[in-house]
Image (cartoon, rainbow over all chains, first blue to last red; front, top):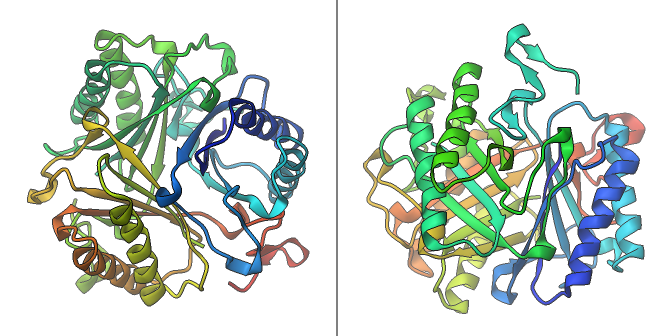
Length: 135
Length: 135
Length: 135
């Protein structure tokens, strides 16, 4: 159930942007057990005066910085999350060619009853038994 | 106190976008007891190469998918949230005419002291008594 | 480690937008002890039909409303957060000249292992000892 927000500087090609979404999705498939078609993403482009980054932690970032925010429900292990970060970085390095220093990832977790994936239903929370449904 | 982010494919009319905001607000008014004027929203439009969705859970989504993210403080009951999802879907179906399959909703809750609605004050947290103020 | 999202109506100058980012960053430096270069921000601009606000809590807001969302890891004291809100409002009032009523701030906190600031590493969580690293 990830909902993914990708924030970059404006000026990339359609192919580049599509590669960002494709590779992040595949990295998630490989590491955090998301199902086929569980792919909800949007990319926002920002001009020079709408995008800021720094050298925090001594990492040499550039205008190609990709800020990735992932929203999902709790339940992923820490090991799975660590594997996801590394896999995203490796895949984006191959395609479309993002430097590892330019990948910033943040995850926000929110309860199963806080998700409705369509039709107004809570697919991961069944009110009848007042507990989260099996994912 | 909802802060609402709406993410869609580019190409809709001003009337369509205004209807999205109006109907989501009214659905919240009817189900989660938000007050008049508690309406803080923004819509982001994305091109074909900046917007992705899948058939997750067997739901037949389209380019008209509306991704809705709601941020507020804890305290809404699960029943109120379920009612809100259903009401948003029903209202958007009527106006501007979004298919129920194309409504994805996610809620993120964050503590009362994490909100300042203006003037640098924490209207839902009073430091004097070190506990959340009455909403 | 703040990741900051700033949402405004379209139409501001580059200087205005840069001032928003500069002053929010300086206000954070003064109040919540973020390090030099810990500056990750993006501004989104929205048209009239993509941006909504109300008079919630009797505050007289305008089209110049600045919606600020800050994502970081837990650990800031409430006092530091309150100071940050007030400092952001004071600085934006001076430059670029935003009315205090037009500053809305929301903070979302997410665990140290939910952050990777580059290279696929979790700089604030060390798997070896299974506990958060010193910030």
